[in-house]
Amino acid sequence: MPNWEWVRNIVTTTDGKWVELASAPELFQNAESVQEQANMLSEVLAGGRMELEVDRLKFLSGRDLLEIVEALRMTLDADEVEQ
Image 1 (cartoon, rainbow, N blue to C red):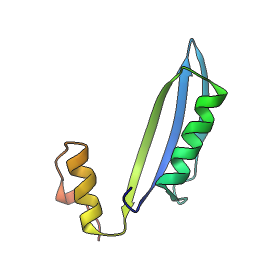
Image 2 (image 1 turned 45 degrees about the vertical axis):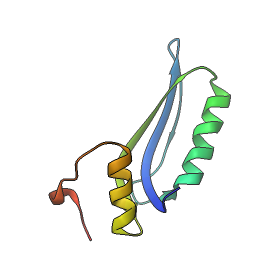
Image 3 (image 1 turned 90 degrees about the horizontal axis):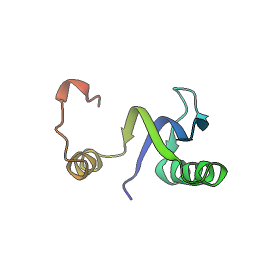
Image 4 (image 1 turned 90 degrees about the vertical axis):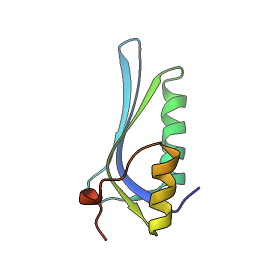
């Protein structure tokens, strides 16, 4: 898994019920922690639809950024990249 971190909001919903985990914009967490939190929400509300809201991504290297752009089949907008 690439070494990248993000700010996020995780929500899982099913049949009008929902469970949410939100964090402050300045709180970055690594991908493994976010995966663990998403798994926990899935246990609380099994069978729900998971949404991950990402405000910002933080990469340790440009290569990590390019890998995620390729994996998601996206294009990179240079105006949205800060070094």
